[in-house]
Length: 251
View (cartoon, rainbow, N blue to C red):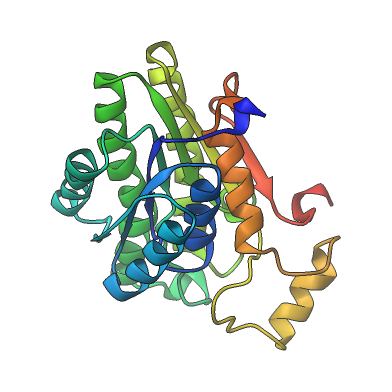
């Protein structure tokens, strides 16, 4: 179907070197997009770039810490020079915090998590929006979390930042809708990582008891939801948050 075709479109994906970011980048490439892969570990990014190129698409890997304004702006400049103006941007880069009592949360840990998950998303959206507003519009997809929609006890900084991503998404959607730029959000639940620290733990059992589908989500499943929101198939969708959570929020 042509509405799902991303042939020759240019996409930027942050946090693209592993897990969800890798799943998003490869799905976009399968749908025809060329991809600028941004992240902190160049070796991992280059591995994903090889996968994208194996799908017949162009890929550029750029080391980028999204909490650094200059690095984000440079990543988008590289995209424009080497692939063309971005028509799709996915703000996926994120970090988690150590589970623990909120009253013991250190300010440095708050700053680390909020700096990447919220400020980094804002910087990515701002750079993408500036380019898209100056060109023919585009689609931005932010990756929040089920913790951006309900409280996740013991994860204060992460939950606050992910709630912020949902609010940022709605505000930018309202700001830019009249200029051809759509801004949406995906809220993953518990997704299998490249190395899952909770596998076989009591925490995993607790998660499975709570989620109706009782399994880990897969990065590709998040990638497919993201690609839908980035595609013309979602042309009348903006300001939305799509949970990909195995039914966690339904009960």
